[in-house]
Image (cartoon, rainbow, N blue to C red; front, side, top):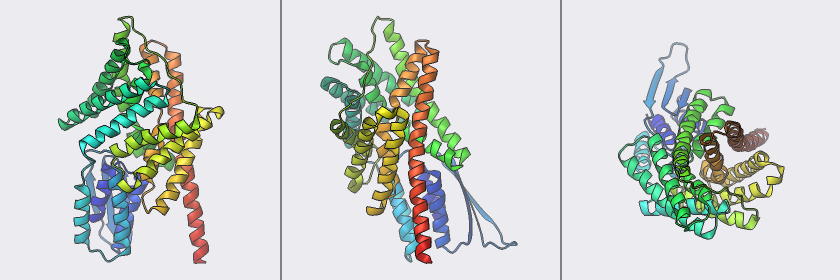
Length: 402
């Protein structure tokens, strides 16, 4: 039960499949259980244990996962708990108490999360070359949309309706600000606000699971990400289409090209996500810096093409995450998930739906495919770097043993 409970907390907090399965296996091995089989999916955990003999009785635990959210603090604490449990004489009873304490941890206070929402919306708008007034407007719109999302979540409104309503509200406020001559670029404000709800974690983890061979989990998470993306794009697209009947058009956006400014903007945009994703306090600045570096590298390497730039930036995130996880004794997820957030192709989903709404099917198909390739480049970059580092460490350990 201890191992299953730890896995359940990790799965509900948005951990990767391999991390959940590895944690459960480690805890069971620490309890001197020789044979453990773990099968984890986003909606359930299946754990079978036995003594390894041909005639031994097999015990199977099944745990249904009813809901999930991204909470990097809990993932980090479970990661630390597994180290403590496997390396000390901590009893099962004491372990269960620690897990109950971890599970009961609350996210940052609501007002701090609103600050995070403001940072995400405003600085992502600035990353897309929004003006100063656009940046401020986008921050206010993001706070309003996030407040609506929290209100709907409180009443158990499903994520499709939440995403649709929040993006529709953000789009209305963005278009209204341009109409009233308060803001200049509705597109940059809409995208800045949409980034609060883009399923970046689900997209990245789904492709990583598929590339790692966890087909069921990968397809399930990809389906979840697709549904969320459709809800976001539909909410924005319908409002834009209705607005266009009034003779109002939106402006296109361009990307920032100054590396220093990109790093600063990326830092503060990631800082907002660190707050929303409940990153451990001592790791917030470092995690935000990883995101800033990723965005700066992306801008610097755009000459190679957006997909190659995304891959190189994700590789940088993967390398930095693995190094920092060992230096700071934290799970690499604490640094990698916030680090890739500036790279998540939220604008691609926005423009794909915009083309669909306007009947440009060829352009929509092209943009949609490019968006998926960008997401794949992020996942592949993280997977390649983590695999190389783990392989190097494995070889190093074997050499030391010899």
